[in-house]
Amino acid sequence: MDWNYYNTFITVSADCPVEFGMVPPDKKSGRTKPSLEYELAAEHPYRYTQEELMFEVHVRHQGISQEELTERGETIRSAFFSKPKACLRASMLPKKYGWGIHFDEEGKLALIPKESAEYQQFAEGKRENLKVVAGMRSSKK
Image (tube, rainbow, N blue to C red; front, side, top):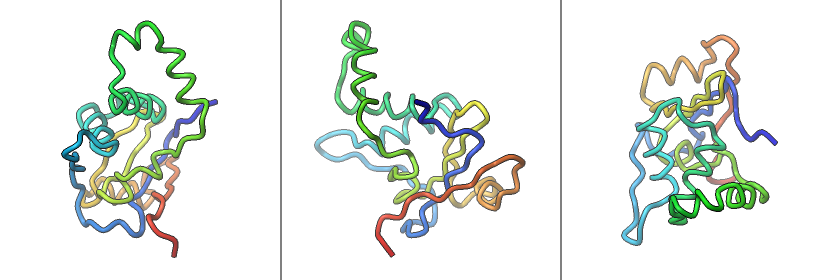
């Protein structure tokens, strides 16, 4: 099963509370999933597919060692993807922190800040062959 998006732009959620793309904070108790998603995507634009990003965030959030990944990587990956997962439309990046997410023709993603001209072009569908989908709302209307 392919969990990835291709030639797609996820807009910031309609009820997102911020006007600018913000860096998600960590908690005193440790890293949060949004901060890990942000760090990986912002530092490596168009490197990860949605599947790759979701799995890498899972590995880091759970503290799975490189040694364990080497030994049991496919088992860990299969177990992770065997259960239903929310896609990045439900991520806090578009819902709360003001980031649109662009997926290129290979399914690789990059974060696009809400306040940028590039965001406007993507959101208005001014790119050829681009599907535009809204980030999920935080609350029901």
